[in-house]
Length: 128
Image 1 (cartoon, rainbow, N blue to C red):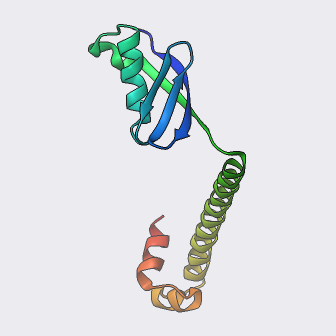
Image 2: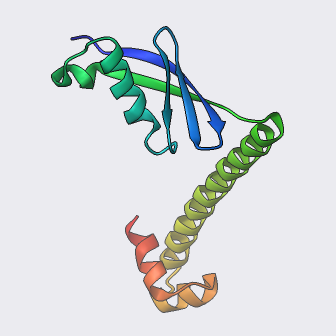
Image 3: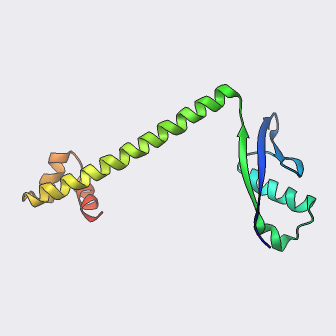
């Protein structure tokens, strides 16, 4: 069976989340953690899809949040993305600094002091 993707809109309500499955109907989940499985089981039940074909049901969940919460969530995601990029850049620079300092003849322990990291971290950066 060919995989089919169903669009699901998750809307918060006092007991969890309403899952609005396009073209199928509405079900509920107590948390977003179980929303995908609940939507798949609901779709299978409503469309008489056998258990062995459940793997062919893909769901794309879109959260319907209060506009203020949605904006704050997007800001947090963007900040996290920028922080990850900065962390990756810092690691690249640290690896390069370790290489350059070692090439200049410094020992691993001296490199650690210069960079303000542990000798174990210098060892890790040397291997990456």
